[in-house]
Length: 266
Ligand SMILES: NC(=O)c1ccc[n+]([C@@H]2O[C@H](COP(=O)([O-])OP(=O)(O)OC[C@H]3O[C@@H](n4cnc5c(N)ncnc54)[C@H](OP(=O)(O)O)[C@@H]3O)[C@@H](O)[C@H]2O)c1
Image (cartoon, rainbow, N blue to C red; front, side):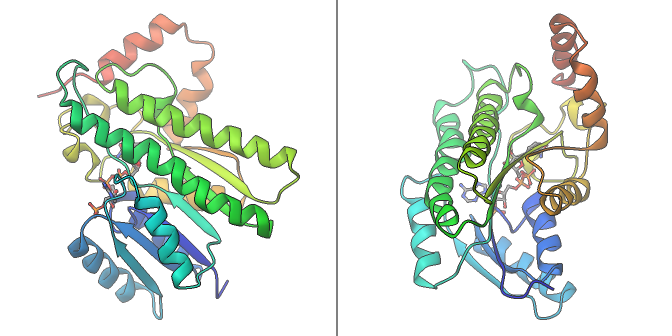
């Protein structure tokens, strides 16, 4: 067991943040969570503590879409003299619909959480990791970063930012000969988290379609990718196959299939 190591997971108290946390806590990591709702945090804490003896969990209830959120998280960590070995930028949500019809403030809030907060959290914690020449940042992107995503236009764009930023930073770290890694994870549509309901996407074909995955599968892929020190993880075996063959499928065929995937089925 790696006693003494600490992982900070945003949105760790539910969804894939929770299932990923379980792998780390079983390996002896101290868990730090930052999530939106105290009640969710308390329930999730009790569940993990009943599963894993002596697991250490500290949590901060905070809206990460606020402008000073990343700084507050950094100050919380410094105040408690924790050293972050792994940062997982996972908290995020999606908006669905035609871009001219979606509530503009909801989309701006999504951009604040999915892009600005990921950028700021990475900027705060990466510097310390580089100074210590160790650590990993795991940023959760999405398969929506692979191609245009009608009716998920802004959401897909936020996840494209996460992918491009993460992969580019990781290449910078190689130039610096640093042992720090930024790993980017792209899950396909996950059937069993709150994401689809929160984004009013419950009836989208993609959640029962060709390349769906589960929170357990994503957590396993993230953990294995972390252990193997991978740069880039496509989560969900069906999505990995589709990604490989997508290189030989013409763009118009790919987009025809995407349009079918985002159809409402009832
Ligand atoms: N589900 C999918 O199909 C899918 C596919 C690809 C990528 N992803 C990405 O995977 C990540 C996790 O999604 P999920 O499926 O696990 O969704 P989820 O079940 O809705 O979990 C989202 C987590 O983010 C937290 N969160 C949301 N807004 C927040 C805010 N303003 N401040 C702080 N925390 C906030 C939530 O905290 P509370 O529990 O306190 O509300 C929750 O723990 C997201 O970045 C998402 O974009 C999801």
